[in-house]
Length: 162
Image (cartoon, helix red, strand yellow):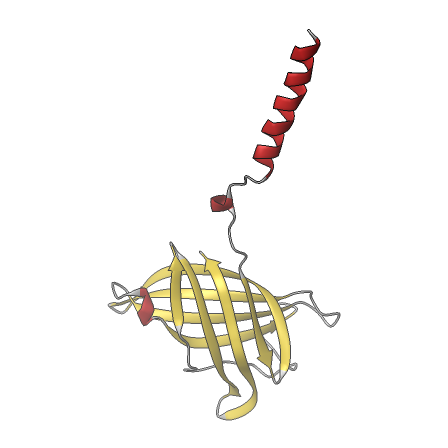
């Protein structure tokens, strides 16, 4: 009887040790993150994406918007940068091009107050990294009409999914 009691705890211990190194690594999803510099100031961000198909005047296109939310949020108020990519519907995902970037502070598209930013035609390599998942880089001047007010540089996001 004593022998049975000694073997059972030993067998249970070996079984426990054999399972400690196991984990389901396939379930682990990489986090969606990003960063960029606004006028030389680094902004670290969490990233999310949204997608929509549009048909305007017979021109069908796909719009992918990557929203980068500054983390942690600054004391001056919530910050978010939306980077918008377009491609013609039916073309490969590698044909997405950045058409605009909009910076928001406290929900208002202003920086500083009363100066609206848009970012026409910046360089924008975008790479599919999985099913409805993208990584990419972006940069561009901040302009209001023809006057430059600043710049977005060294922009990057990884593993955003819509």
